[in-house]
Image 1: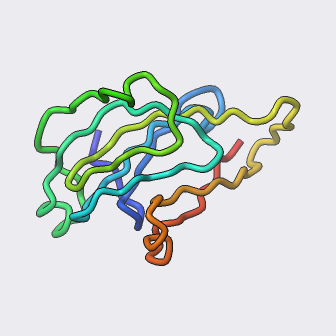
Image 2: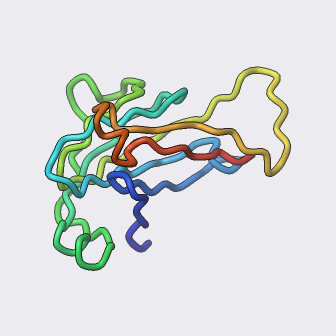
Amino acid sequence: MGAPPAFPMCGTSYTCTGSRCCRKATWRPINATGDWHPEHVHLVQFRVLDRQPFSLNAFNTTGRVVLTGQPVSAGGGEAGCRKDTVKCPPGMVTRITAKFDLSAGTQLVPGHRFRYIWRCHILEHEDNEMMRPYDVIA
């Protein structure tokens, strides 16, 4: 499997599994900045799986994520807990897994989009495109 593509924020990619697209998703926030970013996903709880270093030089010159070390499992208050905010350290890919539970009785029509938002929890970063909508498609 190749390196995941990056979105404009800290760079996030995702893969979906399950009977419907994105019923369960694994996201990889990619922090190519020099700062820690507390990433918040609205209306979704997730589990932190691990973090892994990557080459900032390769990312900055080619846009590709080249992993450079072994994954470090979530520990402390993150291990096994459901979260809505995750700490994303600089130079690391943080892997989280989320399940998109819709309200009971929600009609699932193929192709229907459900709008969510994710953002950096540092308020000043919202003005720098670190607050982005995304759609989960039935």
